[in-house]
Length: 380
Image 1 (cartoon, one colour):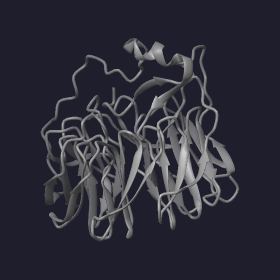
Image 2: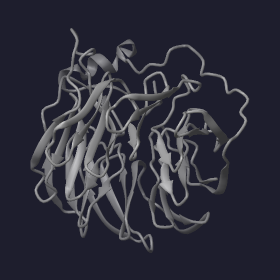
Image 3: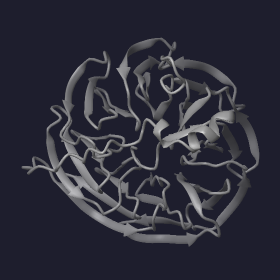
Image 4: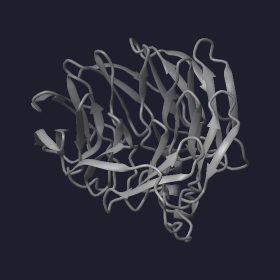
């Protein structure tokens, strides 16, 4: 499987069936070994700015959050901290094991415990501000809006909480197909809408005031004779350009839509389990065989493909200036040339797999490995 981050679960009556039969899991890794790392002549530099250890992920995926010069991070054992230049401005330990985090802004740093308790800390001091019990498993980092927090439960409900006290504002729930991915895909709050991908290839656009659906965009259409073949869940957090919103699904399609009218700009068959990135020129995707693809951002046409990292369990890509960053299952960070896809630099951040998305940070990025190492890099 891509890591422990993606595996099949069944909804309703199918749960017991899939829980007891790993052969039904299409994310099970083949016995093929990861592609060997070949000798590399660097054309760029990955300069390590600092590294700290927050604690292991424990089989979950913890996403660091960046706000200004600060990096917020959390671990499964309950550690939550704010770091600048490799120094902890504050670090606390929750009295619960954690399963998701961190969502952060200038006011709050928000994490979620394994029992579904949402815990919000003051971003400046680390003092606990409030708690709210959801009674549901949460795997994705919370998303923070101007005065609300949106949390995605693993059953694909979206739950909005008041940022002041954690009180519940609204719940969005839609019908799901019999089988769905157990995914760490998050929610995006952008330009006064809430965006989230769902099983069945649907991208929902919601009103943040009440959780009402503004529109629903069809990224992929489930196809096949069996429920397994018809799984076409959107993976990763949607991405937004100036007037475009894009998403990709597992065994479905990648697509971009015009945000002014919802019309499809382009769509093409694709299968990913980690999501995509986009800038003004390219849409960057990692397919299920761990090949990195660059598509033209406005037509979807193929520009280049890099398959030298096959089977290395790559993370979601991140565009950093003239380069593309991916982490892998052995703790390496790979830098690719954005124009050609050629390998530009490589650095091992730690021993733990980098399954969480790399996050833009200043002139570089920050990654968090499964072993708890948080590493900030500058690209030169």
